[in-house]
Length: 211
Image 1 (cartoon, one colour):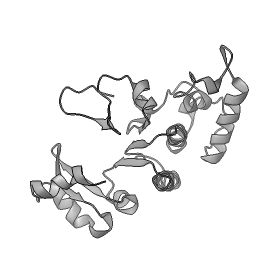
Image 2 (cartoon, one colour):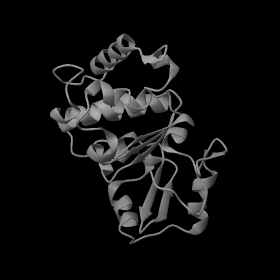
Image 3 (tube, helix red, strand yellow):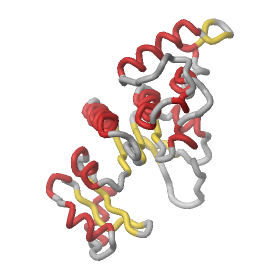
Image 4 (tube, helix red, strand yellow):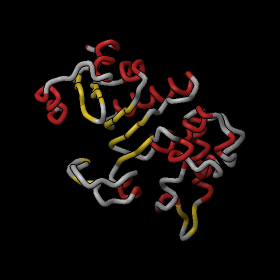
């Protein structure tokens, strides 16, 4: 969402620098924002409009020069059912839904975009336990299917429950790297998060080498 002047961000060797949001999406990157009302959805638009917001321009969504409304409605109904979104119907403005159901709409769009990398930033913040569990299971399913998932979360239970490896940040820098999340506990993580402990540069460098 923000441009950068230093460093490199690449996906499978291709740089994202200078690319628009649509171009970055077309590279195979999906994003769940920590602020769903500002960046995750268009509050005044319908559930359907939010579901197809990343693909309305694609040939598969069109019939000649016009949108294929029948196909779009069918897709919306399918994802509403699959992601267990509680709403009156597909035309309901998304702002009328609960926080958890809004997030399900956002994840339905992002998780079905065919992405090879999913950036999930606080994906379960401020939503009910049921919706949180559902989204976490979906993230694990996508990982199992071969997608890379970068989960950003301050919920230690969440990262320990579903992560394969962990990177701990403190003051904008990497403080620790754990290649096996099952071998670290909350207390140890907390010390690195607070800056009480910091790994050596050699240990941290393994982040770049780990595949």
